[in-house]
Image (cartoon, rainbow, N blue to C red):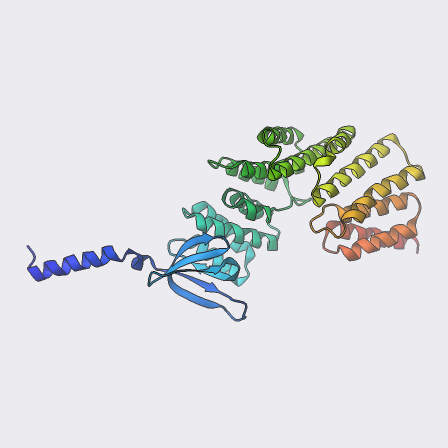
Length: 370
């Protein structure tokens, strides 16, 4: 039996441990940058609590709770989260491929929701810098299940040249996200809409049609919800694009015509005009119509996309429409105008595939006239 003084010492030690559990857990740190340049300010000996809106909250060793805006948080180091720490260090060093892999690993391995939030946002950022579509999908699918509003602002576009294995992996990633318990209607709608785009890119009309049916059923009883209305408009557009992919041109045009009242978003309107231009061009080609009035009408269909949405951020198919219009000018033997339009697209969209195509076409025309 311990002596009285030893007993009191043991009791005091136990009480101290019980009364200050946070002290042992205060092992995190963060680097913040308030815009003044330099390497940032390191805040050590804290316990990170998570996100509150755009702020990262943490508790100091003294028990005070405070926060910093997410945009100012340069790097984290979190006790018990080695994958996140590796990712943060790689991101800070500019190694975006390594950062993307580590953030994806952090998402899969953590039990903390706020770590998933941080990793998903940073994963999308790193993936955008490296063109890693697989990592973009992982980040987006995670964000939809965690923060749909943030996910909507970070939705990845399906690259035109993405390889089938990446598309298959992306579909599985979205399937896994759809299996998340208690998803809201908006979350399900966002994931299904993205999966519909993936199936279109995979050239799988059967799978695309099945997803479209799920979307219709999901939103059938909610016509007055603005988010549901947008999702429904996206669905109708996607159904038209699926018909276009299947070479069902009349069906594609009918889908656009009967649902045009739903297309209130500029990006949706641009997509609708593109479907019309593509379907009518394909119909004319199938019918062997090459007369000048027909070609002029087809060129005007494409020019409407560019004329109405050239200055609209995020509007799709603007550059491609201009290239298609220039190609039709070539068919009409108006090579001077065609070359000028190709040059214009090449200058305005140098980083887009359509810009590269336009540059090659312009050089081809110049070589032919030498």
